[in-house]
Image (spheres, rainbow, N blue to C red):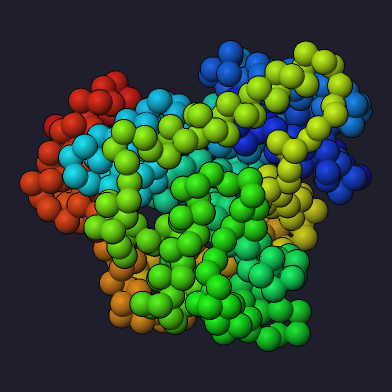
Length: 440
């Protein structure tokens, strides 16, 4: 069985230990020859790197493992690049969330003005990454789940329209299927989903089991009666429990399909704004919670030199999804994943250029989206409005256009005011400084 060489970009992420544990879990099905962590933050990555040395020494000694800040060392002779970078780190995420909130707008990582800010920062680094990889390993698969995935996917498609070895994907649809599986006492791998939308902006219309039965009616009834929670609720922070809890409210108002959790911000912006604390946001929760827990555990295991507890590397959807995607490509398994691709007629009544999130078969030749058909007026209107925001954001970056940035934010359902859009745009430009292109 041919072994592969893998690089994890964002090696210092708090999600990386789980991904390392997942590679151990799949070592027989997806054997790795060389694994490299790459990050621009050497100190942050060292926490995870030293943990990885202990983990692989005990559980995967045949693997060649290293961590580096050197691009040549990271990207030469690579088969797969798993990309999970965060431009500006959690400190900039905190500002993305707090500046809109202090202006009376929702502050959220991937949605609204915060998502715009994060997206404008991320595009440059993602383009640089693609160039770095392609100059050293021209045929490597770049499996990208860097947020905000919607804006990043639009920008990468504009820049590299013919590069079919860049696959943009998000773990939230998988997280939702895992939650459905827990409700029904079923393995989510056995589901056949029918899903449409944009990233963090979509709906499950059908969810078939092995026998072809659509499970959506059963799930709808259970969620409306008992509510909804993530599959790993005991490991989630309070804000995530609130997020999943809103699915019940969305189904009460719009019962046709099972919604992505992020739709709450677009459907109930005033309610969500009233629930957010401008002095303590999700970024603070992560820094005080998951980040602290993960790095402390990494340091403890590195210091003692042996593995005695792998609670922090549980194989969550984030890790399993990306490894299973790579396996499907490498062995041409042609399994189904929900990926972000150019529409090209998959949804009949949307423009071909829209970067839609749909079920796809993934194999050695990349992604083949399932044809979806037509979507109803309500969902079409929602998607077209949101995609206009995403496309204008990417165009604002490439064209250094203040006007298009203003148009993008004015269209966003969390802003919906040109005056508010200008106010928050000016504040975000000042806050981001050299992270942003010079908007004229």
